[in-house]
Amino acid sequence: EPEVTQTPSHQVTQMGQEVILRCVPISNHLYFYWYRQILGQKVEFLVSFYNNEISEKSEIFDDQFSVERPDGSNFTLKIRSTKLEDSAMYFCASSGDGSWEKLFFGSGTQLSVL
Amino acid sequence: DAKTTQPNSMESNEEEPVHLPCNHSTISGTDYIHWYRQLPSQGPEYVIHGLTSNVNNRMASLAIAEDRKSSTLILHRATLRDAAVYYCIPKLSGTYKYIFGTGTRLKVLA
Image (cartoon, rainbow over all chains, first blue to last red; front, side, top):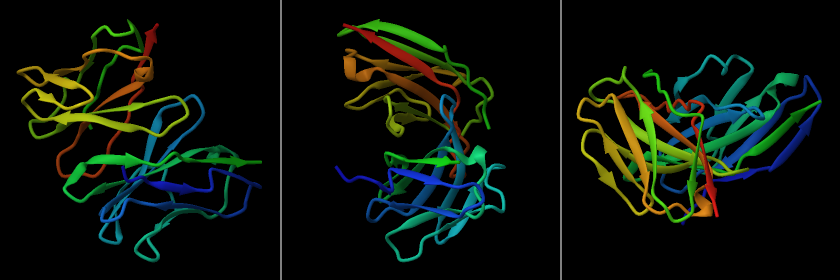
């Protein structure tokens, strides 16, 4: 079965540094999402992306966050100046290609901000 | 977004059916009801979704109340691999936003 691929699996950064989390959605999918999950807490919606623009975003997704689909295959989440509270597991998801209601999630990137 | 209420946790014996309830009394008429699950240390995984009629797939069945204020996810024969947190998500029609609640942690006993 096709998979959503996320890299790296673990990322450690210093507070204030920029990080880019990368995702390769399933080919032919049209809708893309980022979620995050702080340890022991629920999965939180960050942003949805369709047709090269943000469809919806949550209150968490402030000016420090941005998303991009730079080359038709990758989907990235950038955090400009990381804070300690950005430490979390970040999940990418995609949907589309006849089953747009069914999200496929990647295995996540664990971000640790020191 | 419609609010959901799910039990914090449930237990089941292996190979027995499991009924996972969800109340979503504020759901709108065109909101689909989605169920996802999250196995330990993994990303969420789609289980099933429906609008009004009961739905079946290879993973589970979804029974939706006639007034749509509640639904029940049915695992016909629980296996150890089904131990996960199960999330009921009413998705607002016309949006691309799936809001996860706290879900039900299912423990399957061998």
